[in-house]
Image (cartoon, rainbow, N blue to C red; front, side, top):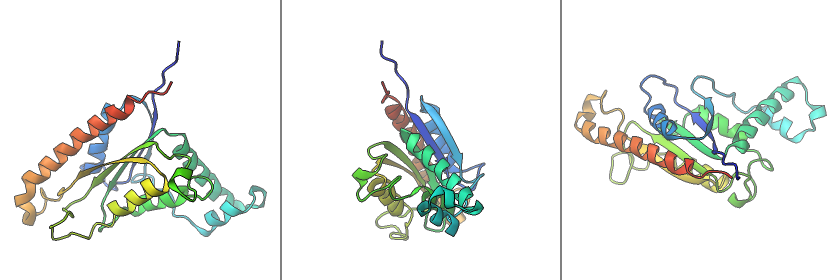
Amino acid sequence: MKRITMPQLLHIDASAVHDGSVSRQVARSFRDAWEGEVVYRDLGARPVPHLTEAGIVARHAPAQEHDAEQATAAFLQEALVEELLQAEAYLFAVPMYNFGAPSTFKAWLDQVLIPGRTLGMSPDDSPIAGRPATLISVRGGAYGPGTPREGWDFADPYLRKILTEVFGLELRVITAELTLADTTPAMAGLREAAAASQAAAHVAAREHARRISARSLV
Protein backbone atom coordinates (compact mmCIF):
# COMPACT_ATOMS: atom_id res chain seq x y z
CA MET A 1 0.00 0.00 0.00
CA LYS A 2 1.29 3.45 -0.88
CA ARG A 3 1.95 5.75 2.05
CA ILE A 4 0.38 9.20 1.73
CA THR A 5 2.04 12.15 3.43
CA MET A 6 0.84 15.74 3.48
CA PRO A 7 3.02 18.62 2.31
CA GLN A 8 5.05 20.67 4.76
CA LEU A 9 4.26 24.38 4.87
CA LEU A 10 6.73 27.13 5.75
CA HIS A 11 4.63 29.94 7.26
CA ILE A 12 6.26 33.32 7.79
CA ASP A 13 4.50 36.23 9.50
CA ALA A 14 6.12 39.62 8.95
CA SER A 15 3.75 41.96 10.81
CA ALA A 16 5.20 43.81 13.79
CA VAL A 17 1.67 43.87 15.27
CA HIS A 18 0.18 40.82 16.93
CA ASP A 19 -3.29 41.74 18.22
CA GLY A 20 -5.38 43.13 15.40
CA SER A 21 -2.98 42.33 12.57
CA VAL A 22 -5.04 41.64 9.45
CA SER A 23 -2.20 39.81 7.71
CA ARG A 24 -1.90 37.46 10.69
CA GLN A 25 -5.67 36.97 10.79
CA VAL A 26 -5.92 36.05 7.11
CA ALA A 27 -2.90 33.77 7.46
CA ARG A 28 -4.69 32.08 10.39
CA SER A 29 -7.66 31.37 8.12
CA PHE A 30 -5.25 29.71 5.72
CA ARG A 31 -3.67 27.71 8.54
CA ASP A 32 -7.06 26.62 9.90
CA ALA A 33 -7.77 24.95 6.54
CA TRP A 34 -4.27 23.55 6.09
CA GLU A 35 -3.97 19.79 6.63
CA GLY A 36 -0.24 19.25 6.39
CA GLU A 37 2.73 19.93 8.67
CA VAL A 38 3.84 23.49 9.44
CA VAL A 39 7.17 25.15 10.20
CA TYR A 40 6.46 28.62 11.58
CA ARG A 41 8.67 31.70 11.76
CA ASP A 42 7.43 34.94 13.30
CA LEU A 43 9.62 37.77 12.02
CA GLY A 44 7.64 40.30 14.02
CA ALA A 45 8.38 38.63 17.35
CA ARG A 46 11.82 37.26 16.45
CA PRO A 47 13.33 39.16 13.50
CA VAL A 48 16.38 37.70 11.85
CA PRO A 49 19.43 39.99 11.75
CA HIS A 50 20.24 41.98 8.66
CA LEU A 51 22.89 40.56 6.37
CA THR A 52 26.33 41.74 7.50
CA GLU A 53 29.83 41.70 6.09
CA ALA A 54 30.50 38.54 8.08
CA GLY A 55 27.54 36.83 6.48
CA ILE A 56 28.61 37.83 2.98
CA VAL A 57 32.22 36.74 3.51
CA ALA A 58 31.11 33.45 5.03
CA ARG A 59 29.33 32.52 1.81
CA HIS A 60 32.57 32.58 -0.14
CA ALA A 61 35.19 31.42 2.38
CA PRO A 62 35.74 27.76 3.37
CA ALA A 63 34.15 26.90 6.71
CA GLN A 64 37.51 26.11 8.27
CA GLU A 65 38.59 29.69 7.59
CA HIS A 66 35.59 31.34 9.28
CA ASP A 67 36.18 33.45 12.35
CA ALA A 68 33.63 33.35 15.18
CA GLU A 69 31.40 36.05 13.70
CA GLN A 70 31.43 34.46 10.27
CA ALA A 71 30.68 31.03 11.71
CA THR A 72 27.65 32.40 13.56
CA ALA A 73 26.40 34.13 10.42
CA ALA A 74 26.91 31.01 8.32
CA PHE A 75 25.05 28.87 10.89
CA LEU A 76 22.02 31.19 10.76
CA GLN A 77 21.99 31.31 6.97
CA GLU A 78 22.16 27.53 6.75
CA ALA A 79 19.27 27.09 9.19
CA LEU A 80 17.07 29.53 7.26
CA VAL A 81 17.97 28.04 3.89
CA GLU A 82 17.20 24.52 5.10
CA GLU A 83 13.76 25.66 6.28
CA LEU A 84 13.15 27.07 2.83
CA LEU A 85 14.41 24.03 0.93
CA GLN A 86 12.62 21.42 3.04
CA ALA A 87 9.18 22.99 2.68
CA GLU A 88 6.85 21.89 -0.09
CA ALA A 89 4.61 24.96 0.16
CA TYR A 90 4.92 28.51 1.47
CA LEU A 91 2.70 31.05 3.23
CA PHE A 92 4.05 34.60 3.44
CA ALA A 93 1.91 37.10 5.40
CA VAL A 94 3.39 40.48 4.57
CA PRO A 95 1.71 43.83 5.30
CA MET A 96 2.73 47.03 3.56
CA TYR A 97 4.78 49.45 5.66
CA ASN A 98 5.47 52.93 4.26
CA PHE A 99 4.70 51.80 0.71
CA GLY A 100 7.04 48.79 0.86
CA ALA A 101 7.57 45.42 2.50
CA PRO A 102 8.62 45.36 6.18
CA SER A 103 12.38 45.45 6.68
CA THR A 104 12.09 42.23 8.68
CA PHE A 105 10.93 40.35 5.58
CA LYS A 106 13.63 41.95 3.44
CA ALA A 107 16.21 40.87 6.05
CA TRP A 108 14.93 37.28 5.82
CA LEU A 109 15.13 37.38 2.02
CA ASP A 110 18.70 38.71 2.15
CA GLN A 111 19.69 35.79 4.38
CA VAL A 112 18.21 33.09 2.11
CA LEU A 113 18.89 34.49 -1.37
CA ILE A 114 22.20 32.79 -2.01
CA PRO A 115 23.56 32.13 -5.52
CA GLY A 116 24.23 28.45 -5.99
CA ARG A 117 21.99 27.47 -3.07
CA THR A 118 18.54 28.96 -3.58
CA LEU A 119 18.81 30.80 -6.88
CA GLY A 120 20.43 30.38 -10.24
CA MET A 121 20.60 32.12 -13.58
CA SER A 122 16.87 31.65 -14.21
CA PRO A 123 13.74 30.74 -12.18
CA ASP A 124 13.96 27.17 -13.49
CA ASP A 125 17.37 26.82 -11.82
CA SER A 126 15.92 27.42 -8.35
CA PRO A 127 15.73 24.27 -6.20
CA ILE A 128 12.23 25.28 -5.07
CA ALA A 129 10.89 26.18 -8.53
CA GLY A 130 7.29 25.16 -9.14
CA ARG A 131 6.30 24.81 -5.50
CA PRO A 132 3.08 26.57 -4.42
CA ALA A 133 3.36 29.81 -2.48
CA THR A 134 0.69 32.09 -1.06
CA LEU A 135 1.36 35.77 -0.40
CA ILE A 136 -1.06 37.46 1.99
CA SER A 137 -0.70 41.09 0.92
CA VAL A 138 -2.29 43.63 3.28
CA ARG A 139 -2.36 47.38 3.06
CA GLY A 140 -4.10 50.21 4.90
CA GLY A 141 -5.26 51.97 1.75
CA ALA A 142 -5.87 51.13 -1.91
CA TYR A 143 -3.24 51.32 -4.64
CA GLY A 144 -4.97 50.03 -7.76
CA PRO A 145 -5.55 51.87 -11.04
CA GLY A 146 -7.50 55.09 -10.58
CA THR A 147 -6.82 55.42 -6.86
CA PRO A 148 -5.03 58.48 -5.43
CA ARG A 149 -2.07 56.28 -4.48
CA GLU A 150 -1.75 54.46 -7.78
CA GLY A 151 1.93 53.74 -8.42
CA TRP A 152 2.89 53.96 -4.75
CA ASP A 153 2.83 50.22 -4.11
CA PHE A 154 6.47 49.16 -3.91
CA ALA A 155 5.71 45.99 -1.92
CA ASP A 156 3.67 43.78 -4.24
CA PRO A 157 5.70 44.28 -7.44
CA TYR A 158 8.95 43.56 -5.60
CA LEU A 159 7.64 40.49 -3.80
CA ARG A 160 6.04 39.08 -6.93
CA LYS A 161 9.32 39.45 -8.82
CA ILE A 162 11.35 37.73 -6.10
CA LEU A 163 8.91 34.91 -5.45
CA THR A 164 8.16 34.08 -9.10
CA GLU A 165 11.15 35.21 -11.15
CA VAL A 166 13.90 34.40 -8.65
CA PHE A 167 12.54 31.49 -6.63
CA GLY A 168 10.33 30.29 -9.48
CA LEU A 169 7.39 29.65 -7.16
CA GLU A 170 3.81 29.07 -8.28
CA LEU A 171 2.39 32.17 -6.60
CA ARG A 172 -1.13 33.07 -5.49
CA VAL A 173 -1.55 36.57 -4.06
CA ILE A 174 -4.46 37.22 -1.69
CA THR A 175 -5.01 40.91 -0.96
CA ALA A 176 -6.85 42.69 1.84
CA GLU A 177 -6.89 46.45 1.55
CA LEU A 178 -8.33 49.57 3.19
CA THR A 179 -7.53 48.13 6.62
CA LEU A 180 -7.14 51.63 8.11
CA ALA A 181 -10.74 52.56 7.30
CA ASP A 182 -12.04 51.61 10.74
CA THR A 183 -9.58 53.87 12.56
CA THR A 184 -9.21 56.75 10.08
CA PRO A 185 -12.09 59.27 10.05
CA ALA A 186 -11.25 60.43 6.52
CA MET A 187 -11.75 56.83 5.32
CA ALA A 188 -15.10 56.28 7.06
CA GLY A 189 -16.90 56.03 3.73
CA LEU A 190 -14.70 53.09 2.76
CA ARG A 191 -15.49 50.89 5.76
CA GLU A 192 -17.99 48.72 3.90
CA ALA A 193 -15.50 48.16 1.08
CA ALA A 194 -12.78 47.39 3.63
CA ALA A 195 -14.94 44.78 5.36
CA ALA A 196 -15.77 43.17 2.01
CA SER A 197 -12.09 43.08 1.03
CA GLN A 198 -11.09 41.37 4.27
CA ALA A 199 -13.97 38.89 4.15
CA ALA A 200 -13.04 37.92 0.59
CA ALA A 201 -9.40 37.47 1.64
CA HIS A 202 -10.38 35.07 4.44
CA VAL A 203 -12.53 33.00 2.06
CA ALA A 204 -9.78 32.91 -0.57
CA ALA A 205 -7.17 31.91 2.02
CA ARG A 206 -9.23 28.98 3.28
CA GLU A 207 -10.09 27.76 -0.20
CA HIS A 208 -6.51 27.99 -1.44
CA ALA A 209 -5.16 26.18 1.62
CA ARG A 210 -7.55 23.29 1.02
CA ARG A 211 -6.54 23.18 -2.64
CA ILE A 212 -2.83 23.00 -1.87
CA SER A 213 -3.28 20.55 1.00
CA ALA A 214 -5.01 18.20 -1.42
CA ARG A 215 -1.75 17.85 -3.32
CA SER A 216 -0.76 14.83 -1.26
CA LEU A 217 2.74 13.47 -1.61
CA VAL A 218 3.01 9.74 -2.23
